Length: 242
Image: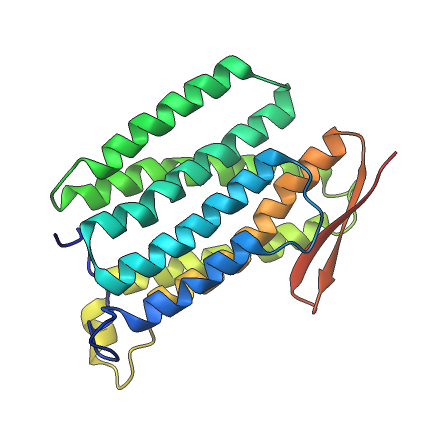
């Protein structure tokens, strides 16, 4: 069964076994994001989110390799769950443990999964992005409030946010242009494969933005977090326990 969306990359141009070669290969960036451990993460909640990101990368690889409705769900459902989990972490950091809210979020995740998987038409694409997009916008706003409140208190936080939001914005631009201007892109001598760049830039941007959420949790727990960079581009969250 075919997926509800076919991206701008020419299908089976590089291999008879992979529908969208570059979009599939670039999905490895998300797998790396999920498995990177450049700082110690003791929290099971954060580990769960990063494992979901790994699942997104695997699902994305399979989806772009097959353009199948079922592998599309393997890409999209973990995205929704990761967004919900990250949103809940930020709420719990701000307001403390919320077991009843956790149950509510779990039920919402199940409902969102049904909404994403059930529609078997072109509208499925819009249902998914309406669900995921709203969580994405709310989460970015909450990350911005963390940045505004703590940018002068935590070393490196301002650079972390500005880099993260800029790279992620560039990723969104790549995604939008690939989606809406495919005819023009296909007329160029070489298709720039912007959806593949979306995978790469989104992974780098999210690594920065997720690190802000981790910094917020560490400070809430009484540690003294600070941000450094490995290879001048990979953010590393360090902390001194009180």
